[in-house]
Length: 474
Ligand code: SF4
Image (tube, rainbow, N blue to C red; front, side):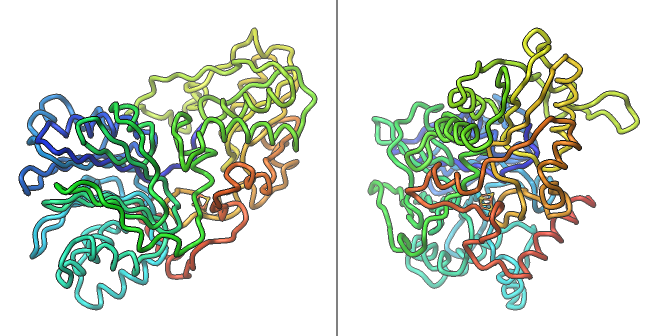
């Protein structure tokens, strides 16, 4: 049950011929919907003229047939799905952001968070910059356009901007003549590209979006790499590659990405099954069956069952038709939101000693409600297992992991949390096991071990919390 959110997904397409690209971007964004459900947008470039449509809502809510067919044909287009941890859920904060400057128009879509955003914004404001949103994307856009005035080509302006910004960014930038895809030098967020036989290229946060539109996966972008798509073909700029040690977000594998996506050569489903197997090895339980919390815990539950040679069962059913517009029950109502989303299969769980696997525990309230649902259905014992280590630290790289105040693992031992949730035992994946999920590559685990790969200044921490606070007040 997802309590943590990724901020965004990005998508781009470059075609040698003019085509109805908005429609292709729509299907790409549909496949990336899990990365952001608050807002979305598409920008198309038709003979150098960039136009866009964006709004709050799911891809299927914001775009209908007439909106898509009203968008011009073009040879380039980009798109974005957004989760609003910063900047509030308003249309003006949706992306792609469109910027006009002296050398033309630019559209930009961003996934991530800049850890030196607060310092950059202060500096830019002192030199006269006026920002219309609180988003990091506007800072990046401002820096690129400022650099653009000094540079002969937009890719030079982007390279200069990469030297100024620090943190997580997978970017797609569209100028009137070129499309650029950029992955930050740490490689925090995923970004990959694929190709069609007619020479059309597509770029996406995850390979599942390439599959959805029928493109053949080519490869992931290297950390620090920029791909430039133009009428001359595709060119790779590696000026900023190998300047930092790779820090791919381990949580992409554990939680965010779609299980059928492949990130840096590792299938997300396989990583989750492996996490479940490691969990069973290090936190075994004497039980009759293994069940997963749908959908987030299913792959790891399979791994747990496989390693411990216990039957893997479907013990919980998820209502898949709860829309964004679903009215959550009020606190005074006797109805429980979790109960509307999940229901136990009594014939499976009754009288059984159960291993219940999920991918995270944030506040512990959802977990407690699920335990309750299983108890009511007659489960004899419930051994809660989590396929990630305990969250102890906030994330500054584009993930909505809250402050220590709301992270239950900051304040309680596993035994205390198990008691609070009504489970018979609780076991987390040991933090050392994370290295076995993509050990040969290198990953960020800062939310588990507090070791941040970039300098996170107090100003940046304050900035994130002030923005979060103002969002909550809206
Ligand atoms: Fe991912 Fe955690 Fe690092 Fe954030 S702090 S990038 S969620 S591993």
